[in-house]
Image 1: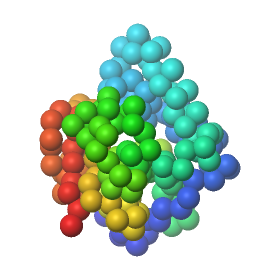
Image 2: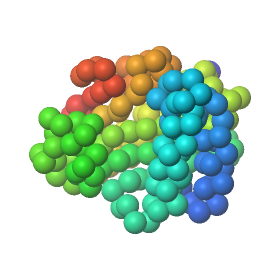
Image 3: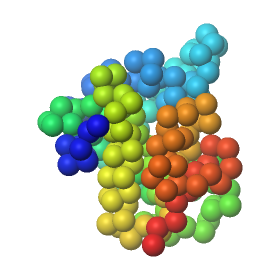
Length: 180
C-alpha cells in the first residue's frame, strides 16, 4: 500500500496539458471522463465532445478561478489529476447537476471533487483515496462546508473511494460530504 506522504498535489501547469491529454486518450480514463462508462462505439464517438470540453477546461484554466486543478505526484512522478470546482462559480452546471443547491451557494462553500489516475501502474493501490483526501484538505483551507462528487454508478472503484472518504450517497451519481 502507498503511504499518504508519498502523494503530493501540485498546481496544474502549462507543461501538464500534454500529459493530461495523453491520459484522456487511455481507455481507463476516457471511459469515465468522456463516455459515462459506456463502451459502445456510439458512446465513444459522442465522448469526443466531452473530451474536447475537458481539454478546453485545462487550456482555459486561467479564465476559471473557481476551478482549482492539480497534478498528483507519487515520489516525484506525475501519475494523476485532481480538481476542486467551486460550485458557486458555475451556476449553470450547479443547476444541472445539483438543482437543490442552485442559487444557494456562496464562493468557497461547496466544491465538487474529481480525479483520475492516469498511469495504469498506479491503479488499485489506494491512491484515489489519498487524492480525494488531499483535495478535501485543499477545500477545507478555503472554509468549505460541503463536498460533492458525481461518479458514474458503474465506476465501482471511484464510488468506493468516495465512501471510504466519508461521502454518502445522496442519489445515483451524487455523493456528498458535510465538513465540520
